[in-house]
Length: 477
Ligand SMILES: [Fe+2]
Image (cartoon, rainbow, N blue to C red; front, side, top):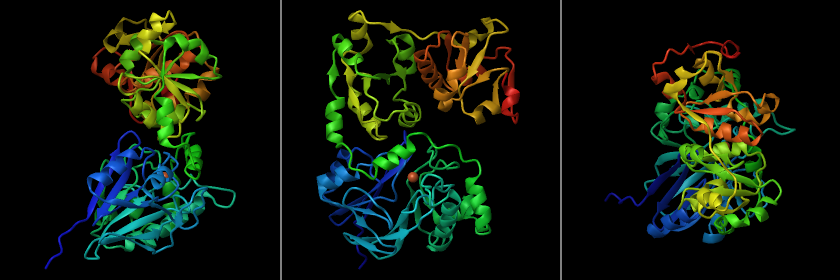
């Protein structure tokens, strides 16, 4: 008689971080692979499925988010498992290559697949009939790409060494597995852990062998190393900080939530602004921020790639932060900040900008212009493009200046703070972030173009736009 399957595999995909966590359950037992910082959803899932969380598998020490493995282990009694060579400040089981972990009626086999990092491991799931079913690859193999090999370099290992190890892991371990298995990676398109990921969040190994450049069987080790190192951009500044936090015991998420959920009344402004380097972070929509915001606050909206931009732009990870949030989204904001280790949230302004203004405290508006109104501007007016280099070189307004948002803290220093400039990105999210940061640095005459380049190109105004395959310098003044 065929045994009825009790196995459950759920991919929990978080778009903001382009990150996938996995919930696996079989016959009363569960495992979580690569949990995010907040652990309540996993505990709720275990309860709903009437299972006990037995293992927390970490494919590697993540650099792009802080995991909640220590909190989750404390709360559930589950065992944390890392791959060979891992070292950390907390208790965990150092798995061996080919070690099996039984979970209900199934088992997971650890395959040591170094390359992205040294301890990187994948987990091969055998179903109730003991057939290979799927592989959780972490950052060893993505859909359409592989993990970058430059994040775990040290005095004794180079990115070239790691790239070679990744080639061996792929060719001698992963590519030798049965073609039908499903590949479940830790990241999808948009993550800075790779450079060429597809939109899909899982695929069969057979198909990846056909379409993923890194699995081309004809690629020599040398060619592979050259290809994956080619075009790698500088990792965001928070990556090494998050990687370090993942090896430590951090403030429990419960404590972070209780601190961050402190309602701060505007009349206590003096007291809070006396705290050295306190940052007012406004996470509402670009439109709301433009209409009215607290003087010197910066904007990074929740409804965008919030966490990666916070990580890229707020350089001090332990900077004291006071939030201005949409009503009811305070907890979400503190949680999303904690996912990338911004743990020093003092609270949020009770009643938001209106309460602030009522108290007689300083507010500002952001100057803005509709894309259609560009034709009313003088011929010699100046534009500032804050998109990525690739977007800018693809097409931009003729003679637009270029200051990519991810370089803003460094590159803004040498600029004229009084020059009038009309600022745009693709859709009006990054330009508002950029202007808020520049204004805080003392810039005075920046105007946002609502809707950004998308609206500009739709507006049919006789505006000169350079298109396609030009070098960055040809687009720049
Ligand atoms: Fe990673």
